[in-house]
Image 1 (tube, rainbow, N blue to C red):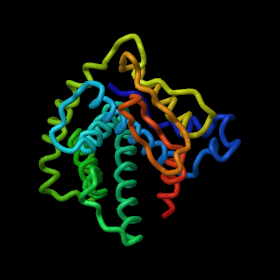
Image 2: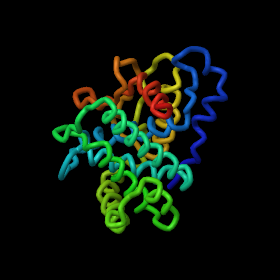
Image 3: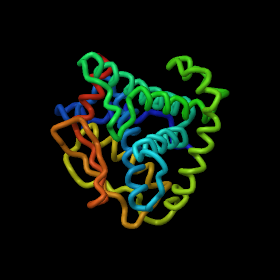
Length: 246
C-alpha cells in the first residue's frame, strides 16, 4: 500500500502560511529535512508500538525502531520517493558520523543506539532488500559490500514478517493512530501534521499516541512511555538543514 510521491516539502513551500517567521520558513534543503523528519517520526512510532503493544524485542530496541522506520518508508511511498527518503536518511547517518569524527569524538559503542555507519548500512540493506531489481543504485551509492548485499532480501523479508504482525494490530479502526497537540504553526509542525493525517488513514489506536512539536533546547526526538507521547523538537529542522551544507 502506498501513499504518494514525496511532494510534501514542495507543497509546504507553496503555502502562504510559511516563510513568515524563522519557525515557519521553508528550509533551503526542505526535501532532505522532510525525508529525515518522516524517518524520525516512524522511528519514534516504533518505540511507541513496542511499549503500548508489549512487543517482544530480541536485541536492541533502537535497532527494532530503525527497522520499522525503513519498512514504513518503503511501504508508504511510491518507489522513487521511497528510495529518495531512504537515501536521505542514510546520508544523514553518514553526515553525523563525519561530524563526530571531525570533532574528535570516539564512537560510543556503549550507547543504546548503534554507530551511525552501522545504522546507515542497515537502512541501505533493508531498502535494497525490499526491491533488489530497482535499487541496485543504492548499494553502489553507499558502497554496501557484496557479502552484506547478498543477505538483504532475506533480511527485509524477516523484518517485514516480524513488524507486519504488529502493524496488523493497529490497521483499520475508526479512530486515529496519532494525535497532534495544538501549537503554533511551523515547518516541522505542518510537516508532521500532514504525515500524521496520512498515517491515520491506515492505522488506529485507542487511545491514540500523542505527538508534541516543541522547542527542546536540542535537536532531538523521543518517546515518553509514561505519557505515551512522541516529542519532535523544533531544533531538528535547523540541524538537518545544516547537515547538507557541512
